[in-house]
Amino acid sequence: MTGVLILTGLEHLAGVTLFAPVAALLLSGVATRHPHDGQLDWIVIPLLRAMEYLYLLALGHGAGVPGPLVFVLLTAVVLHHCDAARRERYGARPSGWIMGAMLGWDGRMLLIAAGGAVGWLPFAYGLLAGYLAVLLVWEATTSWLATPVTTVANAPQNEHGGMAASEG
Image (cartoon, rainbow, N blue to C red; front, side, top):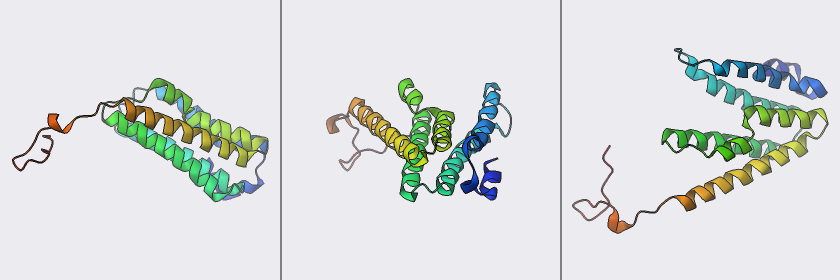
């Protein structure tokens, strides 16, 4: 649906039409209750993320939002996704409040669509980019401060007196 809107020209869209990709993605959310045990189910999350990135990029570009502002918003969203994926990989789940505060892909897209519907798209991009950046910096800072530091005396040494490589 986002591809069709891009091909038809986003600069001619108005109001409710901006919600079409968001509505399509929200309808796909119904399928999230499915157990995801199929052979190609792994592709669902990358597709949802790609649609969010494409929507934010296409809408910003088509509506004349300054390029640096679109870039900052996309960077904040991508960094959030990378942080969440890294934490999951290492068994350190992101805190529940930060995941809720980041609004989810559906919340971010709805907020941007609402900003476009009322004609405040550059303001919505700036507001969301600033909000997400503050949350990312806050979470990174508190995570780093809460991580215990290993002293050099407690770290395993190799035969040359340097730090031993981890086994594994």
